[in-house]
Image (cartoon, rainbow, N blue to C red; front, top):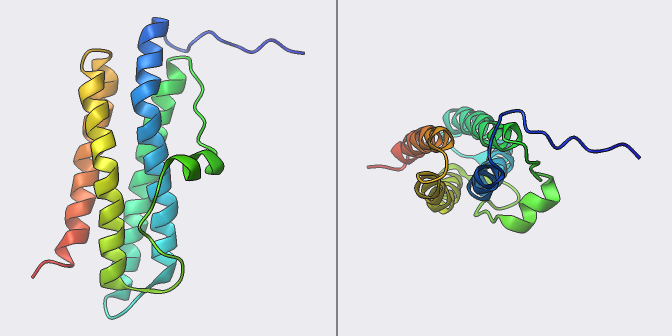
Length: 160
């Protein structure tokens, strides 16, 4: 049996690494869930605004995947593994997105609800990382900024 490598890529205190993992793992899992459910929405959206929403959902998915990668890679760079298997994501997250064809306005509301459910996790990471690691906090602040922008773009389709 081979010995598992435990030396972190960065020279970091074990407590700092564990604190990062505590806050960044839920962010990464939530964003992975948003990416999967956003793709579900992308495939099944229907209605008069189909193409605009279909393409916007692809953008939301791409962003969520990139941000999940940034959060997960930070944990790994600090020397800890991350469990983002689909079974783990499914066990630790929820979604408002339904299976099957859904009208565009309902689908947008569902994706916005998923974003709204994730934002407190992201804010908790920002708050928690303030005393642990400002570099990681900066990553999460950028994620929040981008996610709120994506939410705005989605909401603009519903605004009157």
